[in-house]
Length: 208
Image 1 (cartoon, rainbow, N blue to C red):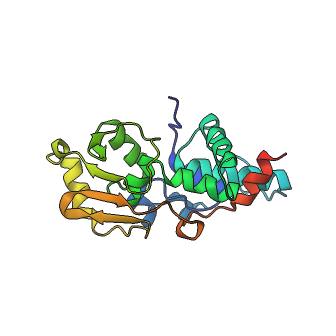
Image 2 (tube, rainbow, N blue to C red; image 1 turned 45 degrees about the vertical axis):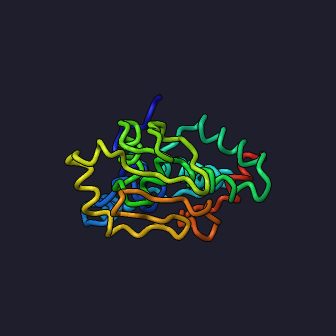
């Protein structure tokens, strides 16, 4: 599947805020948006008046980039969110948070969602005792996500586990570092999702 392969920092600069796409680097003075907070490109520093459509589009692009999702897949998630009971925008965020790569990241078993996606693809994780190597797999309340026993000897996994304790996890998850696992206590509510987006603008965009 196609993926964005250029500099992740350009995406943060385009949105005008940190999207925390590069893990630990985003918390250091190496973060490019701290030094160049304007948009990339020749006209990045020019003042532009943004239309209502432009605001809606930027929110959608921001959310896509935070979770590393391509346009067609994102549209599919929106359709799924519309069909569910409840508020469409909140349903959309809940679905995105339920992705396996995001849960791995939220549990502290990866420094970023991009790294989590790679680790899942390489078969390092199990869900309820079965190997799952699909980053877009949607977990459910009660599911247990664990690092595969055969992966514990990996140098990368050892490094991750050493730093995992420093990673705060959301209240809808429960982590067991001794058993290298985490449990989904419940799917997250909107107030438990710390993603800086105005999801109602995305709903308005798709309602045009």
